[in-house]
Length: 336
Image (cartoon, rainbow, N blue to C red; front, side):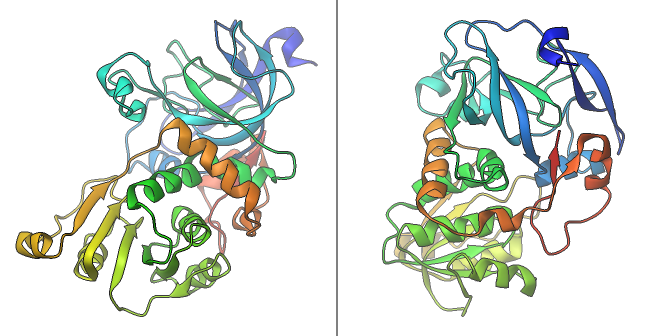
């Protein structure tokens, strides 16, 4: 049965706890600038694992999933992509008119909407990628993906890799600098590749030796404990952040991207910050340019990105990706 003829599709609707029910749901009429995408592959971000496990709150019921790659199958008028385009899309959708959007912070739009975070009972029910189709609304950033980039590399670019590109911008020109990446999960490993691509000498710090070895394949050397020019934290660990801050050389910069949940405070010696010309900055989500930069980086640099993602499970088995860890891998995946 052709879902575009019947205007029906299947979606995994999260209804609380670890319950995801695959339902047949209607495809809505597309508005001006909307794009209907057939999801080719969705990867499972840690934030979705936290939502299902109860560690973070989320709209319920909802269709989760915000890291994905897919093919455009229908559009509304004035859409930014055409039928047949293979695309990824931004996690956040800004209004484009509020002071934050106009000031270049659309990810912090005063009325921001987020892919995979909206109520299934609201105005945007097909907002998540754990479905056969997703409606990418007007205002979302879209990047076309070259055909030679595997789905397993493209899907995480919509969240993890694009966020890494935002941290790279915050870090400044890192060519020739000593960079410490703290945390060798998906973001940290992607950061190793991106910062190495930008000309930095990258060290990786993670308590898991298996993850350290994976990161080495993307250009990192194990951390040696010495001074660095830039430290980028994806761990969210207060002790790790404090240790990284203490190792910054004169003019050093600390970029925080992993502290997305409440945690203990990190002691800061303001005299050392002043005398050392140190900078501490934070990055949360990313801007449209970072999505395009992520694709460009994947396009030009041939690291084994797809090796970080487990083989996909079908949509009917989606509950299994929330009940078993991706041993030796950094992302589980779903092929709707």
